[in-house]
Length: 134
Image 1 (cartoon, helix red, strand yellow):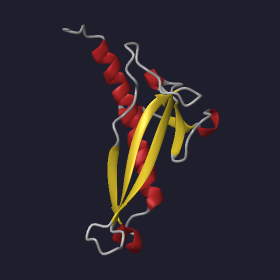
Image 2: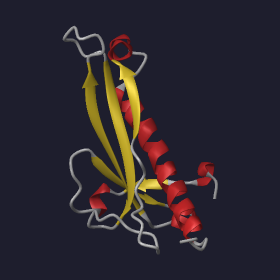
Image 3: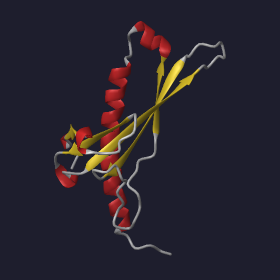
Image 4: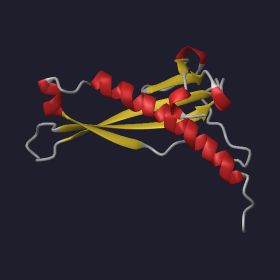
């Protein structure tokens, strides 16, 4: 499966126990069809020049394969299927000028994270098929 073929649908209403900033999607096709993916975005404001004005907003996005109770699923070898967080920064000047929007950035990083999570889950299962040296 290539990333360009991956489709998914919002599924937040199918999952109980989601926390603020978390949304869920169900994978529609491919090897992971039917799997629930949780995406979480958190924010940190940064005053880069210490003048008391926020200069950039950092959005950290992470993902996980979950069940309908928001519990992280594990590979056959017991490893939790969770992506490392990735930070995307938005200059507040770009927000003020209208060259960036929070909604557009959130949509882009959510889409990227869904794809990252599916790729990582496949990689985790592939490396578990290789016998351990220890």
